[in-house]
Amino acid sequence: MKKKLLSLVLAGAMVASTSVSAFAANVTGPDNVDGSAQIGITGKVLNDSDEEPVGKFNVTIPTTASFTVQADGTFVAPGAITVRNDGDQNIDVFAASFVDTNPGAGIKVVAENTLKTADRTNVSLKIFGNMGTVFLGSEAGDSNGLYSNSSLTQHTGTFQIANVPSGESKDLTLSGMAGENDESLADSVKESGVSNNFTLTLKIKKSAK
Image 1: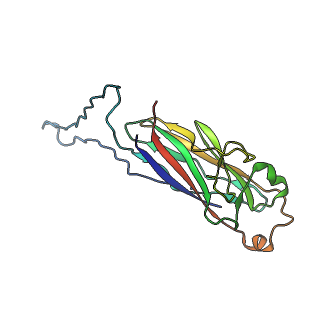
Image 2: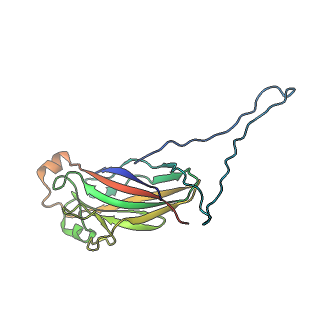
């Protein structure tokens, strides 16, 4: 079974794309002359398990996204991250890993239950689709940065967040919260703000459904 990994960059900001093709024939000209159009027909013979021949993915996903924390601590997320499937097969979309590309500096992605006492450079993040929600964390170590709970105590492996049938689109949503206590916020942040970059890797897999 073929797989494809797509990396989305979040900068503190998320997308991969392949070309989408549409084919149509326009018949124009005077109506006293016969028009014509050619239609290509693709035939498939299934194997003994009624499986189609191996095909190709034709999936479009934005490859960048961003979020902003305003001065009052309001977390502003991007619009929907739309996954468009123009291939012949249904696909499953999995979160494969989440990585802080500049650990220890700028924005930190932490557990939601720590935000009461943290300043606004600390945020909680999660991403969800029509198949589930995965929570993100940027702690150093061997973890893939994916968790099944908002307190970031239960690591999870590759996690399915969406199923996209052939010819359809589904939205992924990035949301979060920011720290509520800015008493210890650095003067440099108060004056100039701060940013950071993260990479969320998605895996695209042919669906068994």
